[in-house]
Image (cartoon, rainbow, N blue to C red):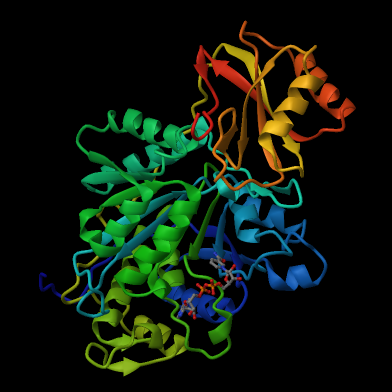
Length: 495
Ligand code: NAD
């Protein structure tokens, strides 16, 4: 650790005023937002703020989306949203407004830096300095769910070529412009060979364009375990939406506290900045929440709008405050802290430290690579030659006997194009030659294939009608295509 002069010299070139929509949010949101805004103003941020109400109050007023229709225009005309956390009902009820905003406004990249600040904030991982790039619009967060039978519920995992290309390229661009040495990809492509397989393949392709940056791939389970035990191994991580959500909370927590991690949500024409944590209802209204995550998200926002000088001033004053041992309860420790303070006093300490540099922690420099990242336009692949070669018909059947079902399916569809080749239950092959030990539900995937190649949509409709005529209920279909001769569907487990 280097010892620095503690007085900072900042350029005082006038910054262009940024149009910023502000949502105070729910739970601890209003407390931490008012503290964060005081710090941003003290750092010299030039912002024209327009408040929007999002979340609980809007839900309770009967708007199930959590946002008033007119608020979308406020957000879009500002181009930037500074947002407190929003409460999302769990299990049932309203859809997550956070996810709706990210997706509606094309915020494809969620960038979450997590660095240890030892010895000032306790962490077992003093060398940890990881930035997680979480794909922000796709994957299971498409939120497309259906109950299909009495026993089986489904959530669709959607992963696209342009979505994958964009987030991975953004991670490499970030690494290049921030002097980072390595980008690691986390996926589960040993199991999800098409969706996660696409993510991994795209990572390999794009990494070749950045030869100066090391690249490696980790299966998410062992990758997450290594991140938790040896985060120093990682530099930049890029991953899909759900994995990124989970590992970024783990990374923030082991770096010191989930309360100190910021998150930038970046799109082509809009950006949103927030803390990674939620609305922490259990401590709301007590004035003890740590505003650091939101303050650092504010610094990310200032960089995004070109106010690097204010961003550096804010980050350095925050580092100096952390170093001085003035800590909120979540990061307080009798050994390392000097005073346990509430949200407002913590903000006061930061404001008092404005224009100070940290003495021991590495200061943030105005000239450093704190420039907004260029966002690439998504690249659409050249359309492949597609051929319909079969169909998976998902059938509800309560007899729970695959051999019996196969006999009925074959009898019902003998006049149709396409032959029954496989039945699976929850993905595992149960016909032909299934095992009696396999547990089976009332939800069956029945694969029909045409050995001479091309089927038509009418062939699929004929199959559905033929089954319906024998009172076999098709609850969903998935067409089987080849793309330039390569199957665009997975085998059954055990096939
Ligand atoms: P949470 O992040 O709100 O809280 C997890 C734990 O961390 C709690 O013990 C909490 O007290 C503590 N904590 C969180 N932020 C803190 C801070 N700034 N200072 C001190 N301690 C802090 O997670 P949760 O309890 O799972 O979620 C609560 C609500 O927040 C849910 O409705 C959830 O959907 C929502 N949520 C919103 C966002 C968002 O708006 N981006 C993100 C995550 C969760």
